[in-house]
Image (cartoon, rainbow, N blue to C red; front, top):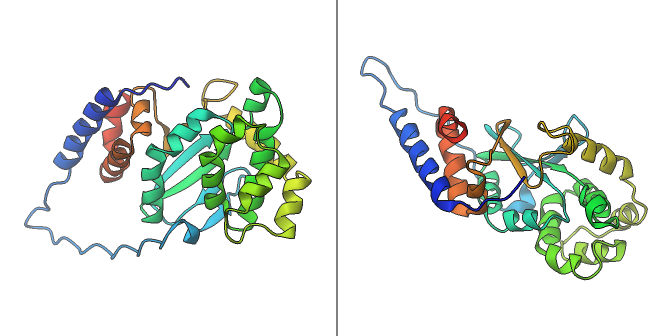
Length: 253
């Protein structure tokens, strides 16, 4: 997917959809007795408290409240520099709403960059991320890898040694079990099927590009793709669609 940072157009679409959402949220007729909504569950204290699990399909990594009404699915290759841009901008809003229990975030991890750039850094990073899931430290380790992506790519890539050194930045992650999983590529089969799941997403047989994002199973299209690289616009997008799913008609028409 080609990245287009079109803040102005995306902002207009988000604002227009917010107006639609507001118009659809009228008061209840006097003849009806509005029921008090159930109290919202308390937000998690931080990312370290987020539940993490491997989905039933064996490839999707699920993060956040299983009962969250909105699901944001992110497709990423750890070596992709655009993924690093996304994680430093719009993804912050997704994380905040995941911590707040409004959103559950799902990940499909691709490794196609190895073919394009050479080496096996993506495969090794995906394997290490899967090992971090076992330790319930996927979210924290994912953040460390993405934040280090530019530096790592410029100095030899995601080698076993570098992946272990980066893991040391996450409290409670390094262990004999984790280290062995990273060193031996324990989850090599997961890497293969995760890449296959990525390739089966969308209409392009090589995959949709990374990062790609779906909200409640609807792909964020090029029309508003630029909003994913603005934290405030991403937050507004999620809030709008959660309040009024018909707002997608403005975004996707």
